[in-house]
Amino acid sequence: MTGLASFNLSGQRALITGAAGLLGREHAAALGELGADVVLTDIGAAPLQALCAELAAAPGGSFRAMVMDVTDPASIAAAARAAGPVDILINNAAIDPKVTATGGLELSRLENFPLAEWHRQMEVGLTGAFLCAQAFGTAMAARGGGVILNIASDLSVIAPDQRLYQRPDAAPGAQPVKPVTYSVIKTALLGLTRYLAGYWAADNVRVNAISPGGVYNGQPEAFVQRLSALIPMGRMAGRDEYRAAVQFLCSPASSYMTGQNIVIDGGRSIL
Ligand SMILES: NC(=O)c1ccc[n+]([C@@H]2O[C@H](COP(=O)([O-])OP(=O)(O)OC[C@H]3O[C@@H](n4cnc5c(N)ncnc54)[C@H](O)[C@@H]3O)[C@@H](O)[C@H]2O)c1
Image (cartoon, rainbow, N blue to C red):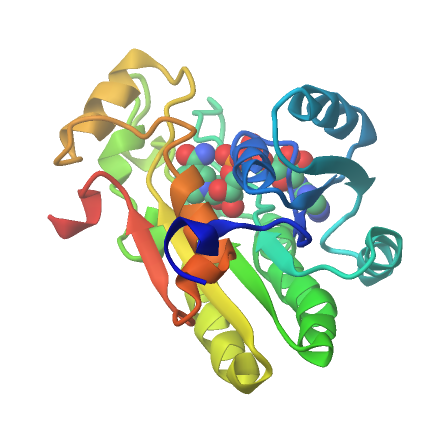
């Protein structure tokens, strides 16, 4: 299969974690467009069902909602049983802490960052990806192949520029920052990607990552301007600008690619 035909996903089942959020719906629409049977999973049933109803109107594959907590192996096992054989897994769930000044002790700062918060974010963004890969990837390897796509971030390849989050009303030691967890989790996902790619290469399970830059989602104008000034293309991403990369990496179009990370960031990380 070559060319556009190699993007075809009819007869393939895809499962997306954290699918009810901003980008999960885009991944779902992208795979549905190629004919996949898409299982959308997240921790709450209602938003998922609403999203499935919305997506069902679009031409292409089919969409199902399933509650699944990526931090809970029993919940993953139950979803795996209910979903049926999964050919494509997108590890998308994460806690992306919004950076806002609290007025009190600034907990986002490294020196104040609560251990419990470190564990909570690691559990969803990193342990969750491991647990889902362990469950679904092992089954893919046993069945003769599959695809895992890990959603990282431009912060997997660059450090956060903390000047982006500065507040004029906060003292220097109380400035909010992008927490350490986000960088550590997203960078570790690339290590997980390479490890799994090597581990399952002979079993025809391909594992890749994308590192998206910031998506415009109605953020405050001052923030958007500051971030855009750091991006050679001069703007944040549209929410649908990762769809084609997801389609490429989840389909046989990328059949000779594994263990890699595609950075899609308007050029931010080249500076
Ligand atoms: N939005 C961006 O600008 C951006 C940029 C780069 C990377 N990313 C990455 O893309 C992915 C999706 O981002 P988003 O903006 O859609 O985030 P989002 O916060 O809108 O969605 C994340 C989803 O994960 C779910 N989730 C949280 N805990 C969970 C758990 N225990 N089990 C299952 N699901 C759980 C949430 O309910 C939520 O629906 C994340 O990995 C994020 O880090 C986003």
